[in-house]
Image (cartoon, rainbow, N blue to C red):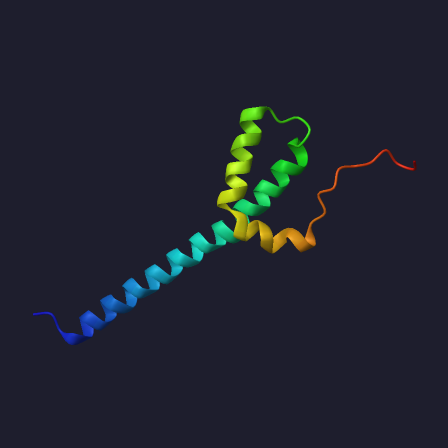
Length: 84
């Protein structure tokens, strides 16, 4: 027979698993992938082909909430010509 204590422990374990899974997915969605996109765009901006640029724009659309979190802290302006 299944006791009440085992049902509570199974529910607690399932809830913990769900919370950890959501935390990991949130970490990837809001931190890891947006920082990787910023790095990729900063290093390849002038070298991208049309299909690469199209895929990067699609990823920017997909990961926009994470990108907007880092926008105030990152400067992605292209290097100028120095003292003009």
